[in-house]
Amino acid sequence: MGLLINAAWLCAALAAALRVETEGGWTAILQALDGSTYIAPRVVWLDWRFASQSALLAKRTAAHMVAVRYDDFDGQFRDNPTASGSEEGNAWAVAYSFDRGKQWRFALEWLRVESYVRARVEAPGDSAFASETRLEFSARYLLRGSF
Image 1: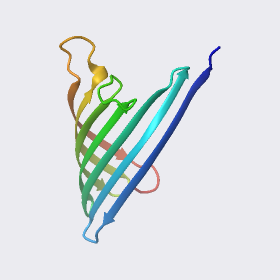
Image 2: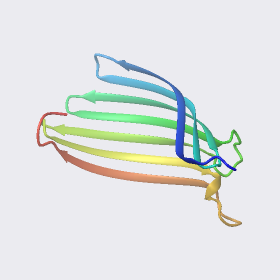
Image 3: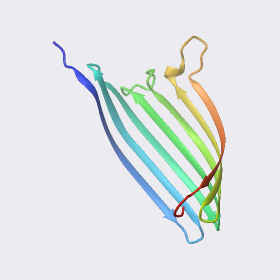
Image 4: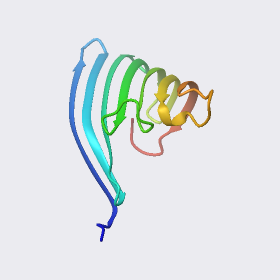
């Protein structure tokens, strides 16, 4: 006789953040998160420990804003950094945005993520490491209200 559990998910985390804004238009944000998550499909318990830290520095001048952000993340399957469900990595983002009046916002963002995911290796010779870069432009029109 076994215990049947239908898709249960339990997550617990501690989070801390600090935000500092100056009269000169500078904003700095520091964040940290540490926790665990448990997933129980049927009878097998799956558990991960995770942690992430990030730092953002932004400067606003009139309708222009430039921001730089760094993230570091780590997830360990069953507290084992070498298990195939574990991963770790970091990311850098640099963004520029321009508000054209109250309804238009244009933004350009560069993002680079480097990660080491053990489950990525499917065959001998595959690399668990990946480096990905994205450049994105967006234009947003607000039908009502302001940013």
